Amino acid sequence: FLFGFCFFDLIPEMIEMGGRNSLFIMLLAWGLFSLFHRLQESHSHGIDPTEHGGMHLVSAMAMHCFSGGMFLVTSFHLSERLALHVFWGLFLHKAFEAVSVSSVLLERFGTRRQVYVSTFLYAASFPAGVLVTMGGLALFEQSLTAAELERIAVVISSVAVGSLLGCLIQDFMVPAVREVRRVAAMRVG
Image (cartoon, rainbow, N blue to C red; front, side):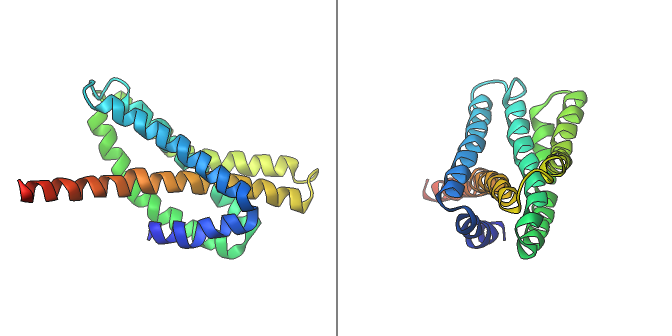
C-alpha cells in the first residue's frame, strides 16, 4: 500500500505541482533520512547498540514523523483528494510504524527511562509537526498570497514525501531484500 501510494500518487502529484524543485527537495529529504539510518546501522554493527544507534533511529524517525505532521496540514492547502489520501496513508502507516519502532527501541536501550524518553520524542514529533505547521501558516497567512502559500505547501510536502520515500526504502524494501538474500543463502548453503 505504502509503495503504491508513494510512487503512483504522491511523487507524481508533487512533481506536477512543483516540478524539478519538488523532485530535488524530495531527493534531499530522502538523502538526509537515509543518512540517519546509515548512522544508526553503523553503530549497531560491532559497537554496543545501546551506545548511539538508538538515538540515530529516534532522530530519523522523529524527523520522519515531524514531516508527516507537516504534510498532513499542508495537504489540505493543496487538494482535498490529496488530503484524504495523506490522512489514510499516515493513519495506516503510523499504526505499523509505532509497533516497529517500539520493539526496536526496547532492543536498543538498556533502561526503561531511555525507552520512555525516546518513545515520547518519537510520539510527540508528529503532533509537533502539525502544530508548528498550523502555527506557521496562520502567522503568515495574512501577509502571503495564495500562490505563495501553495509554494510553501509544495516545499513542505516535498520534504515529507522524501522522508516517506526514505522510510519506505530504508525500513521496508532494504530489510525485505536482505531477508530474501539470507533465506536464499541458507537454501543454497
